[in-house]
Structure formats: structure tokens, C-alpha cells
Length: 180
Image (cartoon, rainbow, N blue to C red):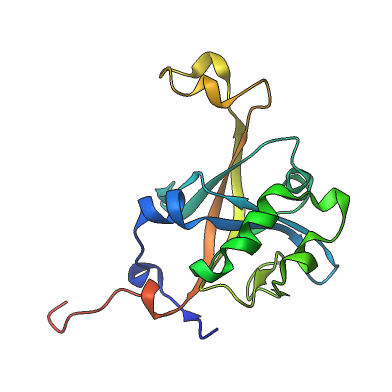
């Protein structure tokens, strides 16, 4: 994959498509130590908070990746082309507790540039993040009626990660006009 570093101000993607239709792999842990896990995510946010670029992800405590996200300071989000959708499906439904689902997916973990958590060789986009805040969703704070049906007491933990580096293909890099 021909990924290049992307400066924050040149990072360009359709936020609604990326989170709703595009899917990511959230990977937490330490690549060098061989201790990491990944899961498919499609709920989250991207923006600026506390004057820092961030991504927000949510992980249920029952997921195997939760323990890695809790134990390690960094995580990555990796996006893939549609041809990798079967691998993302597998990584979203299989648990790392039950075997080596990453090998079964056919994807190749690789070292990140600035953090311990790995990205993936086949990814079109890898966002490297360091955790800066977390909180638990609280059902008594749900204001809209459409939220509660997503839960049966297994409420997500919300993690905010400061973006430390972005690597992506040309499609994620904003086209700079000459008069820009």
C-alpha cells in the first residue's frame, strides 16, 4: 500500500461515510511485545477537543479489545478498501479470546511510526492515537429515545485519542489549490 504521511490540515475524508459505511479496525496494545488485539468499529467521531486533534471511539467492556484499550496508552484506527470487507466482518464477529483471528483475516499487522499499537499493511489509512480521556456511557444521561435500544446493560466506554500521526493514500489527502 502506498501510504504517505498526511499533515493534519491536509487530512481529508467524508466523516459520515468513514464512520457509518467505511468501518475501521481499532487496534490497541503493543506491537513490539506481540500483545495487541483488534476489532471492527463504526461508531466514533473526529475533530478538535482541548486544542488537540482527536478521534473518539467506543468499546464495550465485554469485548476482548477492551482489556487492551484499558492496559495500553495507544491505539490505531485503520481504514481499508471494500475488497477487505470480509476480513473486517470476521474481525468484528470473532473474538481474539478464541484464537488468532488476525491471522485468519489475512491482514498483516505492522509497527506504527510514533506509538506502540500496530496498524495494518493493507490499510489505506492508519491514524495513530494516544489516549487522553475516557468515560463510561451512563443510561440516565440518554436524552434521545433511540439510544437505549442499543444496550442491554453492556454500556460502551468512550475513549478520546489525540491524533499523533496520519498515514494514508492520496484519496485521504486534500487537493491543494494554487490559490490556497
